Amino acid sequence: QSLWACGKLQIIDHEVAGVLARRSLDVIHECEGVEIANIIWGLSKIGFKDDDDTILKIAERMTEPDTKASPKDAACVLYSLANLNIESSQIYAQLSDIMISNSHGVNAQALANAMWAHSTVGLTPPPRLLENWATSKLGLNMAVVPEVESAPTE
Image (cartoon, rainbow, N blue to C red; front, side, top):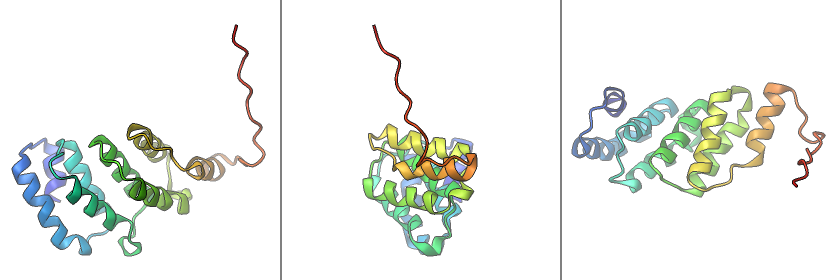
């Protein structure tokens, strides 16, 4: 949680952050989703762009089933990775799958963060991400939603 605190307090010392990030790899197997999200959020908040490989290894841990990652955790990691301009289509897809498989736990902010993250790094979000949210939160049946025709341009 030291990296979360650095981000929250805006303590920007990239040398210390690098040491803490690499150290987190030694204990990451003990972390749950919220702890992993906090680590990556803290690094994002201080703009730590010195070691993308370490950050991606931390993010990969989030995709393992025993982390008990919530949709909010997954959205936080997506947002933080995009904020650091780190793109990994595999990790983005896996984090999106966490949100898709638990769409009842996705709020509007988490959905917006995930959509923004994909767009920021040039990835297309999985259509099911929005579809599942619209179905579970708005009661829409996306299979029968008519396509909206665009107005003719002159």
